[in-house]
Image (cartoon, rainbow, N blue to C red; front, side, top):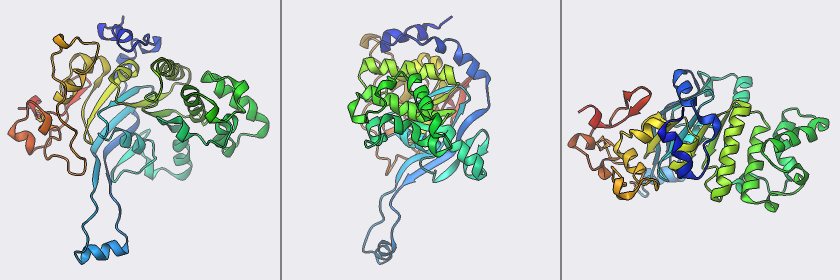
Length: 360
Ligand code: SF4
């Protein structure tokens, strides 16, 4: 039976709940092995000084370039077959975490593990296989698709590099375009001749054509109209069933994340502050930041909301606050919160939160 929280979802997002979602969260909780895992990942951005800049620094003629602390010792597991939603305000580091996990940018510290083994220690053939097995779907399909190539060539490009013969090409491309609901009679056209929704389907077909096991979807439906969003979300869910895919779904949209995810991780200024199965996090949010985010959900009448929306601006990741990063905006902040980083502790089965209120 679907839970009350689950049955509310169609009302909220306008998207009928996909049949594959019912009952899956429970199965996911029973699995422990991670397909992919970020372990204590830190990522900093800052320009490395060249020789002249180093000399200028030494002579006191220049100041060091600011360092952006995008990720701060983040750990996250995604199990086989699971959809994990990664949520947070713009600038919180969620896209950076998606890119590190997808292998697009390396971590400054920590490691990413694929099927239990550190990615950067994999022998070359295994590393190549893992790189194909992990694909990323970006928000803006136009930027991700080569405007000078036809849809057909875009989808066939990577498989041809990996051994697809000319004779197999047509049937192979048609198979993946059909899978994403794209009209194959239009495959000789260019990306600019299609709508945003169609372009995103091509983008998905291109990713699927290398037969991945794991997709990082970075705000993949954010740029689409609401009605098209619903279609593409349901496409992701169908593909998950059909191809046994696993997803990390990065989004700022709680409605979309609640609809699609088995488990949700909430990010704040480079750290994961709460993680739980989807129904648990929406019914019993523990971290004050999660509570503040949920208070902004439109389906809950303003008069009945238990929590207050988050106040103020996200602090700069160049100079994040000491202790709990959320303390300047938290209505419950204590002295301890300004000094000590809260540890993630398990407050219920599969539900972890990093807040001193849980251990004080
Ligand atoms: Fe608020 Fe302190 Fe909890 Fe941070 S640790 S969320 S500042 S109560």
